[in-house]
Image (cartoon, rainbow, N blue to C red; front, side, top):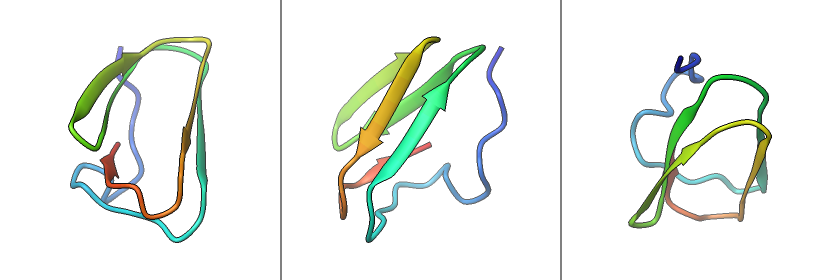
Length: 55
């Protein structure tokens, strides 16, 4: 089961602050730079500032 994502996260983008995401159920497809991951619980993702990612 893939859970809903925030609007606009489908396209690669950056943030001016750190981003923390926790996966508590289901799975999430995540791409950072040129690496793609399938995240499952219990996972936590930390994205540094100005790092290109999607999802």
